[in-house]
Length: 111
Image (cartoon, rainbow, N blue to C red; front, side):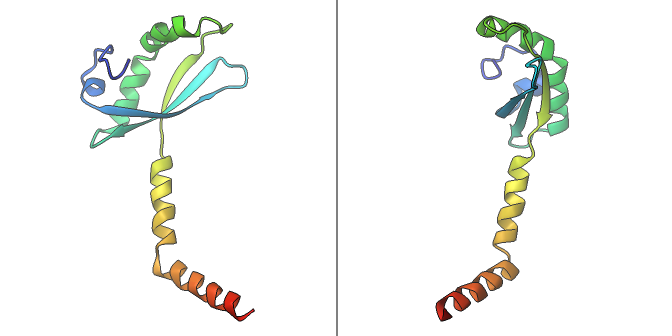
């Protein structure tokens, strides 16, 4: 739906959006979609636009989920997991960690 341009919104139409995960509430009444605008899109504007059109999106996906007792309410949140992965990667590549890993390797060779 996002790729086909079915949502008439300048922010959504001008941004490539990645949906990385959807989490359902235990009662299956709320679906939280974690999204990331790819490129230089304004993440807050993209999230706001998606939440603004959540009812329209819900209506468009209802036929595909007709086996569900309740159609979940959609919520969109920014997925910051990619930023966390980058932070961890930078930490693992830092000189301090490399030094500690080298020190552990040397101790392992002595035993």
